[in-house]
Length: 110
Image 1 (cartoon, rainbow, N blue to C red):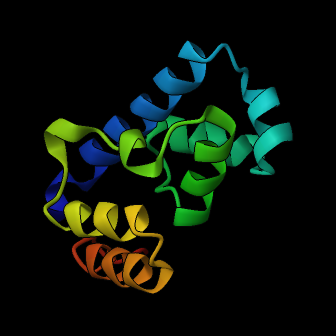
Image 2: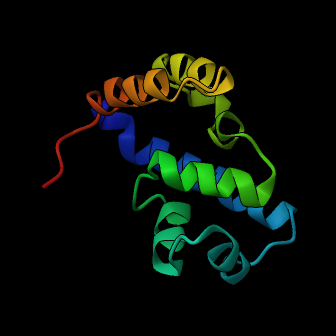
């Protein structure tokens, strides 16, 4: 998975950008409504930074799109199913556990 991470992050970013644009929302509107900074939104959409759960949750609120729908389905890591189920059941503890397990598959930051 670690070799696939940059490609996966680009797909996540492209998916979020496509959802935002399809909703007719500018990056600045996303900043104002989500509370996420413009540089961070830009970096996430470019695939230069992995979004945290709090970012995806804020985007879900603004876009009206659940967190799992923000993830590219064709390249989902198997642990995303656990994350999706936990979010759907509103089990924050399980969601955080699934996200922690997923993050263990990512390369260490330098």
